[in-house]
Each structure stands twice: as C-alpha cells, then as structure tokens.
Length: 230
Image (cartoon, rainbow, N blue to C red; front, top):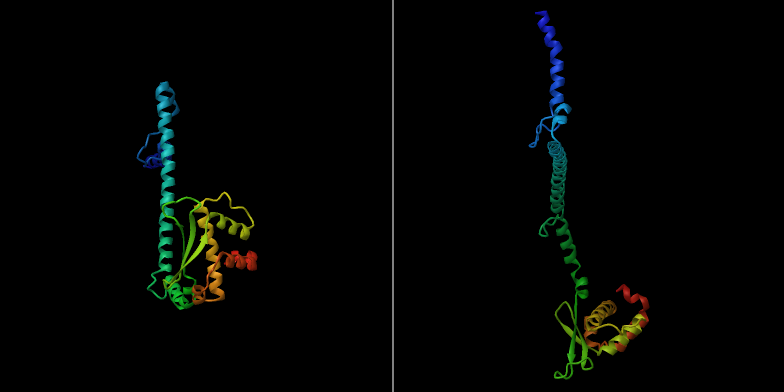
C-alpha cells in the first residue's frame, strides 16, 4: 500500500510534465496540430518538412491575427459606447436640457441680431445683345437677397472692369482669371462689403444706396486690410 502510494506520487509529476510537453500552445484552436518531436521531424521527407513548416507558420500567423481581431473588436465596443454617450449628450433639439436644445434656445434669442447678417449673394452674367454672346458683350451683375427675401440687383461691368477693380483692391494682377474665378472673387468681395455695410447702417439704407464699383473701391481703400476681417 505504501509502495503504491509512493509510485503514484512519483509518477504523477512525470505524467503532468509529459502532458505539458506534448501539448501545442494553441491546442484549443481550430487548426490544432500535435507537437512533433525532433526525431519524427527529421525522418520526414524534404517536401513534407516544407509543408509542415508552412502549416505551423500559417497557424501562428492566424493565431496572431485572431488575437488582433479580438483586441480591435473590444476597442470597437468601447468606442461604440463612447459614441452613444456623446450622442446622448448632444441630444435632441426639442429637449431643453440637451446641448442642441440649449443652442437652439440661445439662437432663437439672438434672431433679431443674427437675421440682419443672413443674406444671399449671386453673380450672374448677362449679354446686352443676346444674339452675340462673346466676351466683349458679357457683363457681370450681382443680386443681394436679405433674410426677408427683399433683393437688390447691382451692375458691376465686364471682365476688364472686374479685373481692374480686383487689382486696385488686392494690389495684384487678375489678368489670367477666367469668368468662374472672377465670379468667386466678386462673391467674396461683396460678401464682406455687405456685412460691413449692414454693421454700420441697416438694410433699408442698403436698398436705397447704389453700391457702384467706385463706392466699393472707396470702401476698400478706407478700410485697408480690415476688409478681410468681415
């Protein structure tokens, strides 16, 4: 009885160690391959060795990629929770306690001030003789529409007049600009001009004024680089 007990005590650690040696590190994975002792591997043919190495290498790579996937999936869960939390904080504009609700409430109280600066500008090209649509015959026109839908049309002039206007204000050549580029420059210039005019006056005065090219030049000269602040 004693000997049997001793034999069990002596053998059990050996069995435990042996079982660990025989277990491949990814035994539980789908692509499990039993550990091959060196003696068995050496007896394999060259083609079989190559295949076995490829199998083992591929298995390690797959295992590494699967671990990386698990990490990424965990990060996705965390980010998803964070996104949900942020959306909740932003909230519904109809809810007064949400950020959107607070923003809308503040905006509504500022409508009397902000409405004056809500306007639309469009630049169109007209031909004085619709039968002859060439560069010399085309003219630029501007339409300014206030928040209350009231609008004013402003005549600007042909390409050369626009280029001369931009050159005098910006102190650089616009000779190579095409109509699309000139249109963009005019939109920007008249936007800042209109904003500044409303700041110093109001829409009633704006619609009563002519806003000629010469008026625009004088305004730009008086403000200098401050025109870019508007």
